[in-house]
View: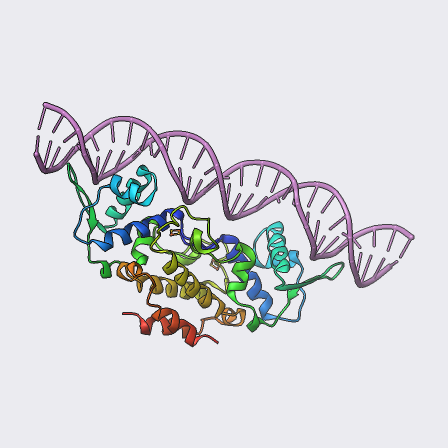
Length: 148
Length: 148
DNA sequence: CTATACAGAACCAATGCAGTCCTATTTAGG
DNA sequence: CCTAAATAGGACTGCATTGGTTCTGTATAG
Ligand code: FES
Ligand code: FES
């Protein structure tokens, strides 16, 4: 229903937690108890985030995960992309041949614009922003002012 | 992966087709052949759109469906809502008790803001807009100018 | 050398989605 | 009146994705 996966939700909460103490290393177990989410699930998420180069890791005793970049340099779009893959609202938003209606479809171009707008919006929100209790809604205002 | 259901995609194409000849009534069979989508599927979509009061219908010989409102008065958000239910990016975006992390969650409020922004953005695009070959990207520009 | 902790993959159950089918009910026209 | 065309509203099913677990391997501090 046009919703992000639950795991993506968890991932943002994780990342925001890490963003609060950027230098520190957290073990998966530690984060799991802190969030109240089963440990294997947290571990899986951290692995995906690592693969997307959003995290740095150290193995062994005392090891763990830490942000690979500064909190303001990681966007919500990055996190969503790391967990769910590239953002594509419609089937046909990524490359041709994915949609059965392609021939003579009147909405493809427009959906792609909408898709792009959403991507830009999510890229504009950083972990640093998300860590604030209430998001500075600059882009929300920008939207609302322009809308009829 | 943060994508609308394929059926929703179909539905927008349907609605845009109807928006091109606002007065005319189309039968489900007619629309099905025109789009190249199986008839039962098209029928199902039309029923859902009708229930959401976006379409008007007439039964019997020569009956069919037509837009219930003018093309500029129906938004993409309306169509998405009719097919997929209320727009809720996150589990917790609609009411409490849906998310296991609620207690002490740091991102809920911010996700709801993002959710709201997306809803506003989709409400700003009407069927009349979608019917144009290339969407007038006022809101896209509005977004991009404000973003760092 | 051992306990800790990440790395990577395979695996499974459950949910939701795409798609079909069947049975009313309404209406135009002969 | 009677029939064919068309919508109204369900129930039903196969499939893909997701949420979540488990197992084996590897690196590292002490
Ligand atoms: S190409 Fe996919 S709906 Fe138009
Ligand atoms: S309440 Fe759902 S993730 Fe915060």
